Image 1 (tube, rainbow, N blue to C red):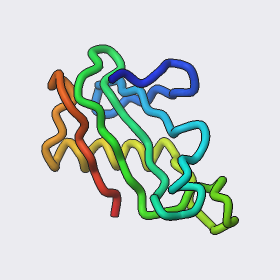
Image 2: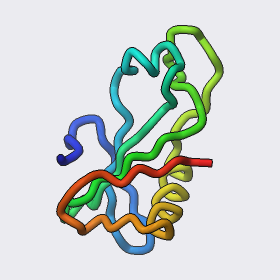
Image 3: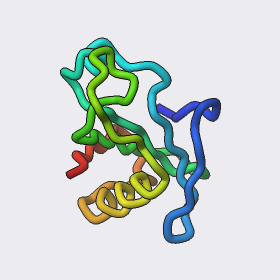
Amino acid sequence: MAIPRKGSRLITVDGTVYRWAVRAKPTYCQGLDWGPLAFAVEDADAPGQVLSVRTGSPRLDNWLSLPGRPVTPLTVEQSIRAALNAGWQPNRSDGVFVHLQG
């Protein structure tokens, strides 16, 4: 499962280029704040295991107008480092690694 180029951004962390993206529109659960804002990350040069980061914040475009925090490049960088320390293997060829952001 590769992250589409359209709507995604690149970030370099410790010499490795990663592609990351936030879903364009909220899911039904995210819209009602039943699920948190999430974003996906993968190695840009050799897509493999996708990192799914679930934040503790509602999406900014939730349907209840609840306050949320945006996903910034700093947020993505910190999440990548934390996931790597927790065992994420971006070059592994299968599955999704779920990381809960504190």
